[in-house]
Length: 152
Image (cartoon, rainbow, N blue to C red):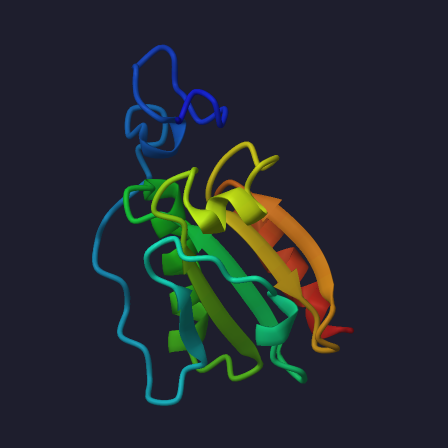
């Protein structure tokens, strides 16, 4: 499944999204505590289908839809980054989590057919419209997309 999805580290024989030799900064450390009222919700916990993201976008806030898997260390990197933003009191951010579980899940089949690697993130602007899609753990690109979405 990982090889078919293009998520494979050939030198180490493991999925690229889990290769701690190539990505020593990946971690499964606990995430920061979130304050009461942090806008976070799980839309899919077990790969079940979510037919529309737009129905879950929060008007007036930047909404980050995070397609992840619990086995994906790169996903934890993005998760920790967004958690830190929420923990610091970023009330203009809504975080929506979607656990694909596996590439062939209904959720994966709907949204990830052409995505080369996890995490896959979709950023919606304050206007409730999609702005940017990202894959991989590029935190600078994620911050840039959130900043751009805040201006919409």
